[in-house]
Length: 176
Image 1: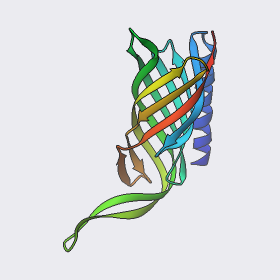
Image 2: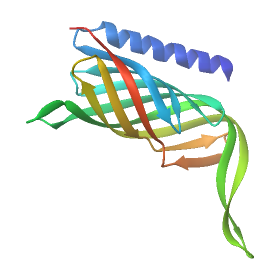
Image 3: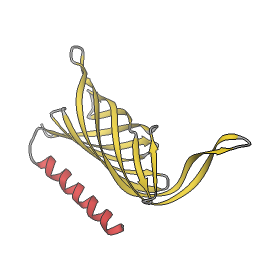
C-alpha cells in the first residue's frame, strides 16, 4: 500500500507539473482547505473554464489523495468577474484510522447512533460544487465548497458522506 501511494503521488505531481508548463494561459493555485476533510490543495485552471485539482487531505485519522476535474462559470458576467461557481467530480485513495457513525436499531429504544472503529485503505468517488471569490487587490482566492463522496473502506464497507463542506484560502500564481 505504501509503495503504491508513493507512485500515485508521483504521477499526480508529474501531471500537475506538465500541465503548468504547457502554456502561459494557466493559473496555478496553492492553499489550504478546512472542513470534514482538511488539507493542502493545489489547482491548475485553464482560462477560468476548466481545472484539475489535487488535494492531500486528512480525515478520520488518515491521509487521502483527492483528484478532481472541475468546470468554472462566472456567476454574474454583467457586474463582477471576481465571483465564480465550479462543479465537477473525481476520485480519492488513501488510508483511514478512525470512527464512523453508524445508525443502529433496537427494539427497546428504536434508532440510535453508535461509533464503529474503522482502519484500512479507502478508495472512492467524489463530487464537488463550490463558489469562489477572487480578491482583486491581492493574488488570493476564498472558496466555499460542498464535496459529497462515496467510498469503499477496507474493501468491505461502503460509506457515504454527503455533508463535507469546506472553506479555504489559496494563493494564485499567474503566468501572465
